[in-house]
Amino acid sequence: MKIIVLIVFQMKSLLKSYYPELKKSELYKWDTILDFLKSKNIDPKKINCFKEIDELRNVNNAIKHSSISNSRILPNEFKNESQISHENILQFYNRIENSGNNFFNSLYEFIKEDIYYFDEDKINQQVDKIEKTMTPEMAIDFANKILLRYK
Image (cartoon, rainbow, N blue to C red):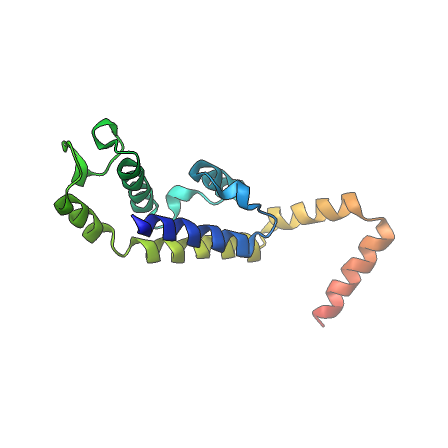
């Protein structure tokens, strides 16, 4: 199923675009991607259509590894089936068809919030970083330069 390859590729590209510190090797496993999102206070389960994308990933793995009969994590379209048929793949696809776009739009909103929204805690974290890395004179100069940009 090429669709999951495309979704994972797009997700990796989106994450690399906004988090350049990420290494490609860190984006190899699904659980690593989820852990990274959690480290950014993005709960994957709150991303729209996360469940459907995860189901798609599981279906893809079942097909790839020929393990449908052993898998307990497949969606309802494949329950009580001994093999995957064209009919249940089509039924599954019809249900999740728009999930990719919804997932990426939602993920993008969470990333934007992480990067561009500064609440009191996030501001204090930035101040703590600056305090640890700058002398008082450098910090004052830095703060003055920021203030000048807003005048």
